[in-house]
Image (cartoon, rainbow, N blue to C red; front, side):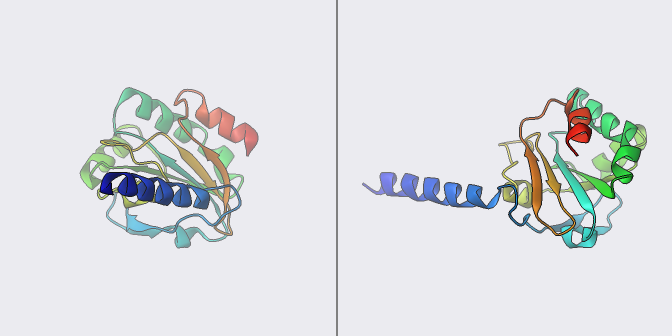
Length: 161
């Protein structure tokens, strides 16, 4: 009899958390370090639009394609007062190599304990899920993109921005 209660509790809590991640609601705050070991939190970007994108793994084909697309379109985002922050479970060293290898002009955030990914419902078993959140300068979620296509996502994002 205890197992059904546990399952019901887990489902209830998951659904309650999912309610928090709707367009218009406050984005979960976070604090971590970036690829250079510098502290970063969502509060640092008050007044700017934040493109918070989760990706599975540094230097893999799909993740590289998506990161390069953000890199190649960085001016379109900067022109709209937006910053790009990439998040995965990789180490600072891995992020540094990935960023340097592909000349990525944006911060890569470290999420080793998966707290940020969990807060944004983007934590898979071993890797972050490929999701993007557009957060307004007031800290509210403007758009949510789940399971994005790394080849076309950035262009889609720019069109809807």
